[in-house]
Length: 153
Image (tube, rainbow, N blue to C red):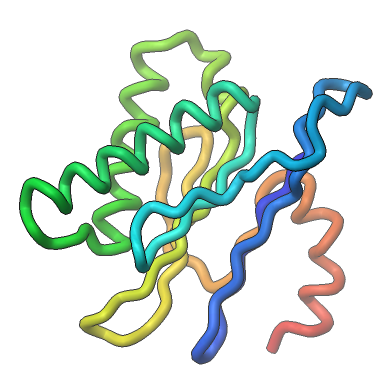
């Protein structure tokens, strides 16, 4: 079971992911990094099949860096999330439909310097984007739902 957790509060933000790479009952790695640094103000956590997840998140990271290099200004969190959503939608149309089950979900966490606040955007297997304050996709939602319900105000 893979989990990516995200939480935005008043003056802080947290994104966390498990570090295991598993297939069925076989554990391949226990130090897999599922949180990617996009730039100095943005992080992206992703879950899914290891090959697809790594390739897709590195593709997004390189394109966010390329945009900043070409234009001299970084993408906002919303712009980076929309770019990610668009690339995911394109991949869903071009590649087989099993791709949607292989990538899973992504969380994009960033700091908006104009509004001086943290933003978290989550996207999913059908290429949607939603601005959230707390995110726990897939089975992690079931596991952590009760504890968040009790402690979240």
